[in-house]
Length: 334
Ligand SMILES: [Zn+2]
Ligand SMILES: [Zn+2]
Image (tube, rainbow, N blue to C red):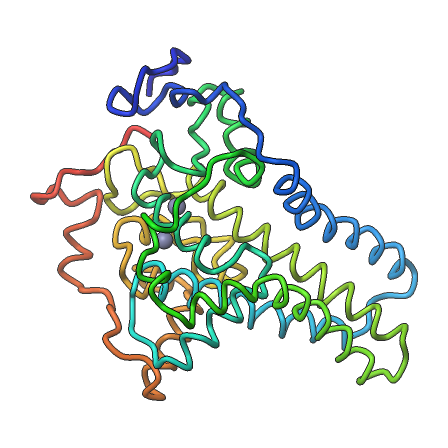
């Protein structure tokens, strides 16, 4: 791998190592977007501090942890199974009601409205790790400083930049779906609900307002923060650290990162995913834990999901980087 910080002139000129054209120029987003994004990113962190302070010497109530786990699983699968595998990649067809339920659950994950989320993620696949990718850790080049700066950008810096992804271009199917438009418009209300429900549940379980507040902290804010950072780690770490057993498109450096498999519900098998984006299972190898794929399997058995794109054994074999087969679109210089 060559390390160069010579800026490339345009997209076609990209060599896989230099900073992206215009990477150094900063166009911050408007004040409203920065304020809103800042609140969404910083508030859960402040809550973490408060929660640690409150828990110091007292421990955490089991009810709060169980509630947090329940909300984490529901909203997390809403993002991975709903936003990602169903709505972005069409890995299966869901009954209309399940489709809406998944879109609602994902919206409660505080990661943007469903239509914008899908548009940004499709753009990420269209331009992975090359100019045009909304959140590539290679934006500032592959030198050490550029790489660290790129990781911060891919994790959360990209949300503060003025770099709109037009939904008309990347998610016309969702814009033509009245149910998805309704869910997208309800995003702020669903975020509020995502915090109100744990509060009400904690209040009901303990019978005290204080119980409601600690549930709001743990199962509301801290649960949101954890899911956000796990999702963002797939954007940042899962393009830099880990293994690359499968061929991906030129410049695409997606990796498999096993320590995040369970918390990310299988999404950290990101190299497998970038190799076969529409496949319903991201953990393509034996023993690769993929709870999202398990959930899709369950929906299929219940008759709620059909046309599931399960991995095709021969195709997967042909996509291996150690297989010299006919497909030579791999990039192994990462
Ligand atoms: Zn990716
Ligand atoms: Zn994807």
